[in-house]
Image (cartoon, rainbow, N blue to C red; front, top):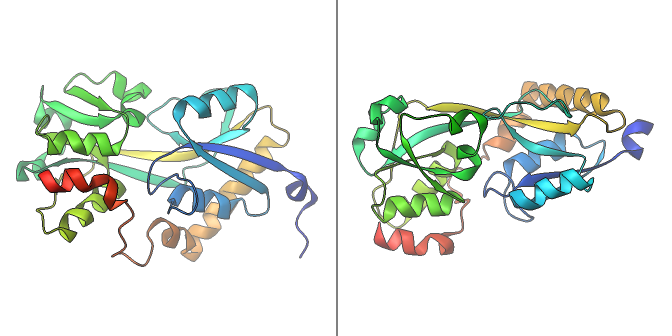
Length: 246
C-alpha cells in the first residue's frame, strides 16, 4: 500500500542528547531511537544523537524540527507540540550499601550528597529540590565513578543504566549495586515537534497512534526490553577502571 503523500514528502530531522542504551549513534543499541523511528516509519526521519549544547543550537537555528527526549521533569513550552509519553525512565537510588533498598523518598536520605546526571539535575522540577545536596555530573559514567571513588554514598539514575552497569559488575564477579525497591521519580519521555512545523499536529497524532498500536501488539515492549537480557549494553572498556576499584 502506498504511503500517504504527506508522510512521503515530510522530512523530519530530529535530535536527542546522547545517553548510552537510550539515544546513541549507530550501531549502538538505543531504545528511544528505535521506538521513534519505528513509530514514524512512514516519514523520512533522521535522528541525530549529540550533546545538549549542539542539540539546543540546532533547534534554535532550524537544523532540527524537534527532539525525541522531552523529560516530564521539565515544563512544556508553547513553541512545541508534545506527544503522549512513549516510554518511562524509573529513577532509583543506588548504592553499595543495602540500606538503599529502603530509600523510597529523598527525605529518607535527608541532607546527604546524592550523585546525579545533569540531564536530570538541570530540569525544572529537580532544580528546586532541597532535601539533598546534588553532586552533579555530565553523564552516567561520571556519576557511577564518584560512587566507586567513595565521594558519594548514593546516586540516582535511571533503571536501564543501573541494570546495565550491574551486569558489568556481575561479569567481573563484583557485588552489584543495591537499588531502592521503588523509583524515586518516574520520568516520562515525549516527542516534541516545533509548533510552526507544517502539519506538526498531524505528525504528533500519527506518532501517538503508532505508539498505541505498537503497545497493543507488544512491539513497543520488545524494543524497550530486548529479548537477549544477558546482553551488556554498556562499553565495558569505558568502565574498566571503575570495575577494577569497585
